[in-house]
Length: 481
Ligand code: H79
Image (tube, rainbow, N blue to C red):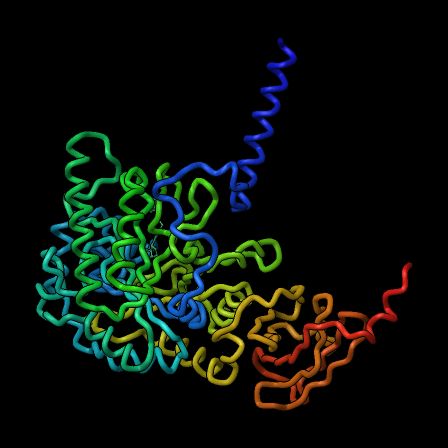
């Protein structure tokens, strides 16, 4: 009897380990082990429709964090807080009604949506994610469901509407950031612990639905909803609502994409459901970090989008950027390429000033990235994970029969080693402007690619033309050893 018990115990231990490991590696469970879910993933695997393809092909985006928090810029009652500026209300423990008095000062006189759109266009971004409402609850559009909107400020203008039009006129897609957590609404709950909480939170979800429907109706060209502020127990206990919100938006706006951060399943499991399937259309957990380019190749199985700040952790405007390291344009660029090389999108954040202008550092950054994208953007837009072995000089990206080498660290040998997958040959190497680059095969599936004639002074791109089929001439190498 004891022996049987021990066997059962061992078996169950083994089962738990494998389940935990599978969860950790984000491997879906074998079909026969899946548990039924009402609010799990709506679709399995990547979406392949035109709207999703456009989302993916865009690859480079800009984030705009703009709200009342731009006015104090990280400082409250003479004290500068080093935490994220858009969380200042929380750091300085400011009550909502006092915080909302900032609305009297909302008058961004220099705001010009067309100038913003031109700046984005010049930077080479294909989409912009805009904070329609951050945690503070202030709405950048004149929502009829809240007292805290742009319409109730001296400025009065629908800045969101102006942005949507201006970006769209430049051919730039608009995505909406929306924080479910709302510090301005007394019905919001962090957890549901009583009947009263339940009733209040039900009202809160109805209010949220109304705001989402309002956004989808007023701005029907919106291409994506990126939800944030969804980590609280109250939302995890209402996984049904996250599934409902996704479906509601998709019915109203065919093709619209939704991030995984919105979602919680029947058991409160977030991003990936209890069966290990990604919920929403793309993974949105990469915030201020990126997957490891060799160890984390699992991310290439689903769509994902990373978002990053330029200082260490400031999204909204903070008046003092000297409190943390500020990434250089080259460091930002490397993160963009890194993301695309692993089949992801990269969104670079901007926190406009309260006067509606951008700080000089952000203008310089946009210009530097734009200059590079102008010359080398073909290795970014429409590109994907190449599936080739990572080399220390940089990153590979791929579009059809073109594989791009994006070189950030050229070696002293001046030879760029490339290893191709079995059966894949390089037929030509060239710079984007057409200058031919020397390439010699040094062993099977191993090449030395030369450096450009003129020593580059910035990260550069070599375009490889490839052939996938192995030729008969290769057979001589198959001798058994
Ligand atoms: O909008 C930007 C940030 O303000 C927002 N997302 C980006 C795009 C964001 N900031 N933090 N988070 C999301 C994650 C929240 C972390 C938390 Fe906590 C940990 C919330 C509760 C526990 C830290 C500790 C903040 C409050 C307590």
